[in-house]
Image (tube, rainbow, N blue to C red; front, side, top):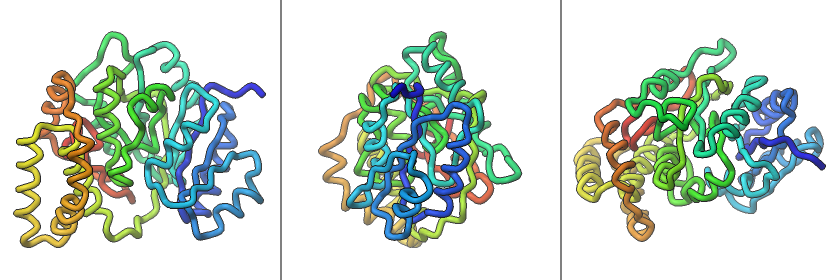
Length: 309
């Protein structure tokens, strides 16, 4: 069977109604992409829904919740050279994947493109669009858009070989603000990461019921520092979080979880090459973008953990 050049990977857990809506939109696309749903050990009727209503969709049923790295299982299962990520509350606009394929095919160093995101039924532009579009890293002659070091996972398309070369989403972070580290790792291997506003994704986020999400975001932001940034910077950021932890329960939880994972982070530490570190430093003083309507903030969604482009 001949497959189209792009596949869509969706990692999901216990979001059956939203997943059904997303699949309905993806299956209606003119590109007819291969779709792989990676189920992170759902306990609702997700698997029954997929078997009953979406037999044409490939399903990887994981025995435990892998978080964001579940996407890597999906990428490995694809038969396509390019992989687009959707969450169970996001999908691609008609023609967007065809444009992404065109850009990736014409620019062999392009490893990941970050799309323009429209939020909710009103299709409001996500504030991150402007942040990415005005990245101070500018353009490169062999890439089709503005260079960035961050993105929104559910609105990104990757070259499969580049994604696997970079190791995919890091298991230590699990979920929440995992994009910056992958952007670093792609750039460290010479792959381009750019914002391409001609490629559009739709995002319909529901309120996040996970009360611990802000602490997880801050934990992962700090772990990214320990994994890739200079030690003095990682130490300074840790001291700052410790000072906040004296009066802020979110910071206290983030610090506790960071320290529990710090030995693993130190074993996996791989400082950025100088040219990527210089790029990241350009973003260290930039504020995080505001959250899109109905969405959680995306720390480090731009060009440095803790700073957008």
